[in-house]
Image 1 (cartoon, rainbow, N blue to C red):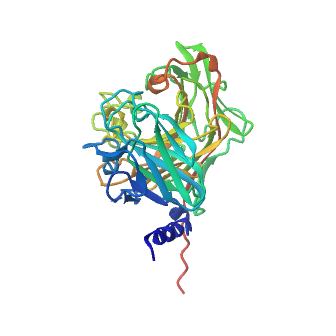
Image 2 (cartoon, rainbow, N blue to C red; image 1 turned 120 degrees about the horizontal axis):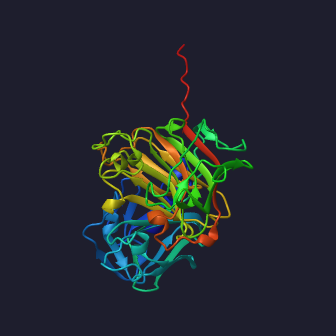
Image 3 (tube, rainbow, N blue to C red; image 1 turned 30 degrees about the horizontal axis):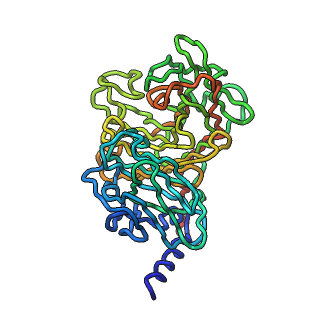
Length: 443
């Protein structure tokens, strides 16, 4: 059997998914400019094949990745990938790391898949928060590949393009073995259900220098027409210029492992910062310098390191100046933004403001996977028993909020006051646990 025939047969076997878990495995992955590599999430990256153009290079140290080896090698220049792949729809995850000391805006390039521009003016430095030699993954879902071949090319829009790796997956439906254990379908009009949610009542600036006050008013959080509406307004309220709402389920919905789904429609406009995320229900589990319960448990300070020590899981974050971009992140004592090495992923999604999407987390004792709809775009795996890297062994609770401004919301420019009011609309929140197989009674 020829090498090409073997490759085609392997791809066919991979595509004939026996289970949902198998469908989520990579159909094909390549370490651009480097050798074969087995990643911590089980993905096998082939040594560079079907890749041409430009020249290879290497970065000595890369931050922000469990598998830094994949980002240490790259190609730079007019890069092409022409790989045999059965026709169908795929999710593509691109791996980047900027090797040179430069400012955002210097290196920009476009990425084309099957002749369709899927990344325009890609700027690795800007997309990685201005940090050089840091890992960046960008997933583009639901791309059509025809004629039994995947064709990708990168074109310069500034300095030469760079690429460190590529993963090709097929989106997969949810495993039917999950059992629903907790939910809010938002079918009772009025105030959010106090048996499930607590509404925060905070002034502006409590965390992240956010500009809004969080209130408990129906104006900012209410259930109507079968949905939860979190609504932000520009108004003078108790010293703040904006109001919004933040709901959390601590003490009412606390969970260790499972599948977590939130179906939502997001706001628009520069200055919005919407989030669906989780914090530990006991924030002091791994704290080392906290002497008393205080507001610092939410995001920590020099007197209390409950955060990030006890962890954070961001299922979905959206900032209005990055249209079409959704982010997933985990924060731990070893990996968070102040160290410039946080673990994160990004996916490009159309119609965020017009359509509902399902934002989902699957969390087990060994790994965290984050999805939009059926597309996997971020994985974080447990690699040791150190709480500094894996504090995710205690119950966590939900947080749903729409912030205005703040350190990230204002990063793209001043708040656009002409956009208000803005809404994050939530159709449902659901929590699933693995189905427990019944045991047969012995005769």
